[in-house]
Image 1: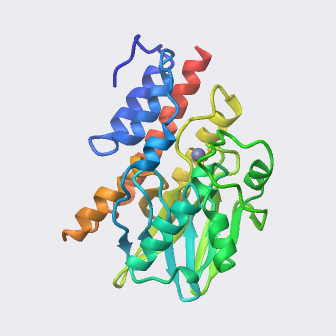
Image 2: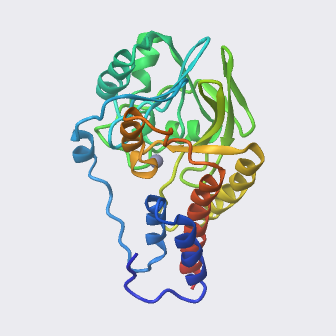
Amino acid sequence: MAYAQTPSPEVAPHLAAAKEAAGSDLGAYLSLCQSADPNFKPTPPDLAALMKMPAPPPGKAFDNLYFVGSKWVSSWAITTSGGIILIDAMDNDDEAKRIVEGGLKTLGLDPAEIKTIIITHGHGDHYGGANYFVQKYGSRVVASDVDWSLMEGTLEFDSPLWGRPPKRDVSVKDGAKVTLGDTTIDILVTPGHTMGTISPLFDVWQGSQKHRALLWGGTAFNFGHNLERLQAYIDSTARTLKIAKQQGVDVFISNHDHYDGAVEKLAAKAAGGPNPFVLGEATVQRALTVMNECAQATLASWKS
Ligand SMILES: [Zn+2]
């Protein structure tokens, strides 16, 4: 990664630790360290262009976990004995219908079974299509208390391309459990990207093999020079490193393909061989370490 100037002695060790943890396979997370460069000028994503990219085929990551997203933003469907839990609802009604609903049908699943939608955080690319399912199927919408307030207040980076936020429905706090049928999702609140970001933890199955999955609910440092949020991000990743270790988390996915490479992994899985979504515990620890060290590097650069 190129820096316009030599990083300060406070920043350099965190950049080095992030780089080492990233290895050759986690470079997408290492891109977070760009924020530690005082000359880095983030460019806001060109939403219209991202949304125009052709949607990849939907796919099955595990027996009970399906990808129904675009190249830009992901929705994940968890199948249970009581219906479907959808994690995130894409940008708007059109994508909800075309990509999520259409994708589920392609996979042989019934979108009318979407009973619960978990919104990872209060940005429009994750809640924008939720109302489509609420109106059509009566799906219940779960978000953190903090991010319901965000969705009710002044929206961050609102766009006319995004659907309106759903009405406040089920509000959860850290440690809550969301159960549907035989499946329980553990709600981990990981403040930082937003102050109420949810990172769901749940079991995924491949035949008789059970794996523990964590979906990181908000990755980018796109909150400007906000010390509270950056510190929260550092604390959340540090805490999650311990939780992931305790629970043996070996699957780490995202709600943006840019980070987890879900689209490529689905194609590789379809071609046969071992399931590329099973990263192993050590790789999950490395990914969280990259995020934590990049956040620490950024904090150090703000202070130096
Ligand atoms: Zn976001």
